[in-house]
Amino acid sequence: MNRFAKLGLAAALALGLAAATGARAADEPNNDGHGLTPSRQSWSFAGPFGAFDQAQVQRGFQVFREVCAVCHSARNLSFRNLSQEGGPEFTEGQVKALAAEYQIKDGPNDAGEMFERQGRPADRFPWNYPNAEAAKATLGALPPDLSVMAKARSYSRGFPMFLLDAVIQYQEHGVDYVYALLNGYSNPKDLNHNDYFPGGKIAMAKPLTDGQVDYTDGSPKTVQQYSKDVSSFLMWMAEPKLEERKHTGFKVMAFLILFAGLLYLTKKKIWADAH
Image 1 (cartoon, one colour):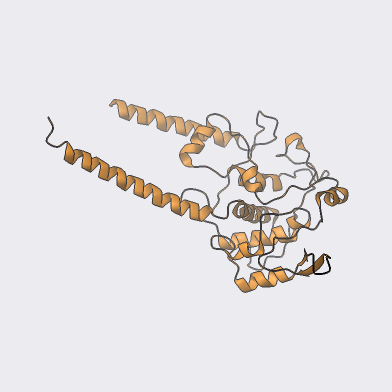
Image 2 (cartoon, rainbow, N blue to C red; image 1 turned 60 degrees about the vertical axis):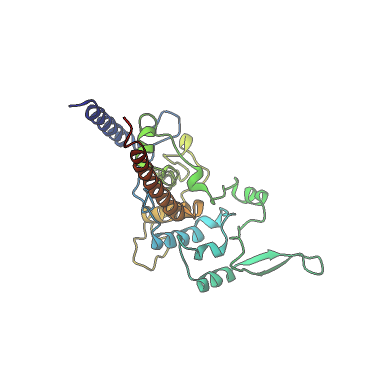
């Protein structure tokens, strides 16, 4: 066995060991005081060629609208984003009808007064509270904005998993954490206990229950399904250009590989007669 073969075998064994270590570490307490380590989930948008499942993102928006948006804001989300390619892709008519269901504060008018009007596709998704102070007074704490939550939240997989993540292009730490958090309410007597939240206590009481959201496409009406769908929607909301980014990245890599090949052939041609 030559030197390169030995190096390849060593690398394969190291990656195998890292994968096995990660499998054992999932859903076990980690060493940084942040509760259980979430398990890695299977997502349609994972990997270099991944894409969002349109039906899942649409269901996720339904969960977000009926459950999450009662308390949480989504400042970066406009109604028109819901019709853009690579996301829920609702029709323009559906988006107009959806926006019209909301009353948006606008103004001032000619009299210098604020007024309310029907929502338009260009409007931001409204929050149920006029300001952060009002939300705190009602809920006891300020619910975080969910616009980029799936990218803002993460967890440490430790050594050697963080090395493996770069090789397998694992970038779904945040959405795995959101899914685990929504399924982490394991104590029926304490609705604020959460296995994945630091300290085991979270201000948000268990938000999801079986049968809470009425799906019309036949999907299971379970906490696990709701969590999966809304996590996917939050991932899209945090990175709506994910599919475009991956398509661009593939084209760039293909160009670089072709360019490298042309450079090599050019070098061979130029130095062919050199001794």
